[in-house]
Every structure is written in C-alpha cells, then in structure tokens.
Length: 157
Image 1 (tube, one colour):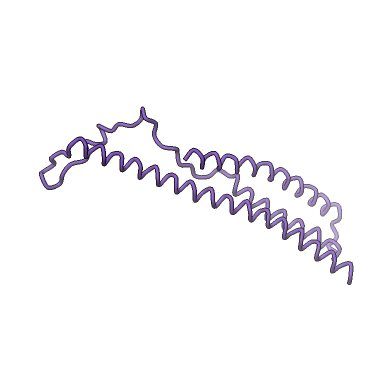
Image 2 (cartoon, one colour):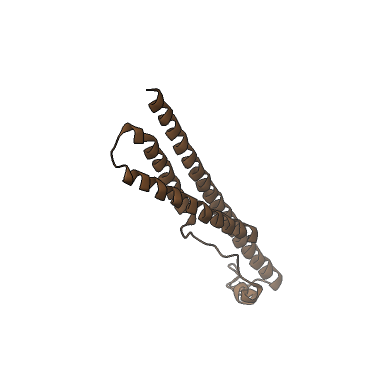
C-alpha cells in the first residue's frame, strides 16, 4: 500500500512540474492572441495551439486537485482485537461467544479484507490519474499537430 501512496505522490510532483510548463505556454499564447486581436486565418494555428494547451491544462488540473484518500490502515497500537472480537457470537446458541482462536481468525480476516480493499482502491485511483496524465500529453501533442497542419494548409493556399 505504501508503494501506491509513493506512486501517487510522484505523479502529483510530476503534474506540478508539467502544469508550470502549461501555464507558461498559456500565458505566452494568450499574450500573443491579445496583442494580435484580429481574427484572421493566419491566426488559426495559434488558436489551435491555445485550444490544445488549454485542454491539457484542464486535464492536468484534475490530476493535481485534491482527491479522495484512503489511509494505509491502522497502526498496531490502534488495533483492539479483544474489543472487536467480542462482537463475534454464535447466533444458534443464544449469543454464546465464539472461542478465542476463531475470534482472532475472524478479526485477522476482516483486517486483511480491509487492507485488500484499500490497495485495490488506491490502484484504481493511480491508474485513473496516470490516464489523465497521458490524455493531457496527447492533448498538447494533437494541438501542436493540428496547428502544424493548419499552418501548412495556410502556406499552400
């Protein structure tokens, strides 16, 4: 589980670095658009670049924004097996208690089940954030590609 949290932290660190680059590109492109306000066909590549960078920035913001967090689990000092195990009783024998060995087995089963749920959840969250990261990079790539195609079309027209 700690590996998944480390992976999430590293993804967030990379996202902050990339968002700084995207913010710089957005600032430069917006400044260029604001200084050349006329909507002419020669500005189409700049608008396409601006659209790609904007889309990529929005996706990267989703990676950075606060997200749900599942803790690693309880520490050993927080575990209260005797308190928890008292709730295991046999239904047939009018609230007769389960023997100590079976109580511990049930207790460990529940703890391991919770840990497995937390690990699977963190894995899904990390996978989704990695996909957003990839979509963001693809967005900027396709924005550049569209701008180059538009530029080539404008040159040859």
